[in-house]
Image 1 (spheres, rainbow, N blue to C red):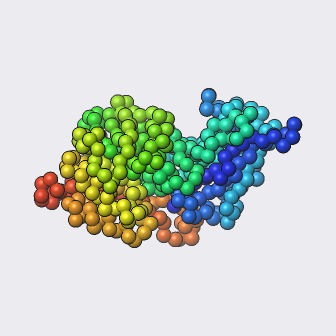
Image 2: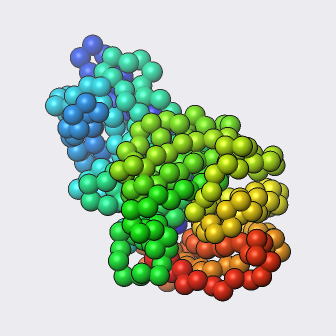
Image 3: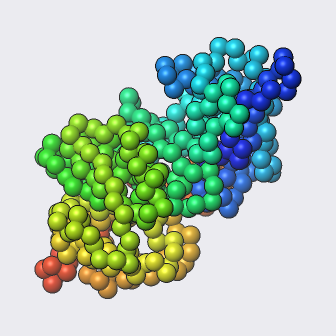
Length: 373
């Protein structure tokens, strides 16, 4: 599984006395939903990055070492050791020293995702905000900045399935080995416009990654109202590819599709980590069916890390509603400890579906091959 460095207490500059000041933060390393703590020893690196010019100072210390079994770690740095830091600044806590941005492809899904604090100043009394930034590089020269909440709202967190889906899309778009793959859909004549809708977008990682990598991609991110503020923030921070654009809209699966959606034809429907709650699965399938009724040629791409056996009902309902499964690929999540102990690795499964309800007949399965391990 992927682990995430999180700020339990955001970085803050505190004055011990008139001549001594320290930057202090409390961090933890947990799984996406916080149910597991990182169990191995791990040296951590701390960087201070200026939002104004990108200048950064990277520090290491034995005191920054995460010990397997601990639940949290205080990181405290005296200001005299960072005189070159430009204020205001961001604090980055990372598991690697050479860069402060995590790469993101099928070959480089990070074991531990770095944490960027919000910007804070030398004279601020409250430190940075409780948000955390994730910064990824899905391709050379292309970066993603995704803000997520440090608290307990699962709607505003980055999930393993989202990282795996973004990595899958990145690798599929950038590779050329599979002319009949999902890449052929994302590269319709390579320069034609594609319309995409994402359900349950959360922080927006998957859709923003796609729009950043693929020119002429119009994508609509949807979720419930409590996710709209963070989606909007991340859209404003995004850098879409040429002639691509990202919009967002409230969509409740229990309600009819709004006019802004029914008036549009979609080529691709993205769903990531939305089957964990059995209660919401009927509404999700109903929404997918409604979308397919207006866009029968659309391909549904689903990424899920199965957390409960009850999620199987989703696939049964998709079949009953007239969807055919075109392809399935498993993406292995990195876990050095499990590999060392020869334990089974966790997987994110990516599925492609297409509806048959408009023709009334099962369609032949087009060869859609997702890039995967």
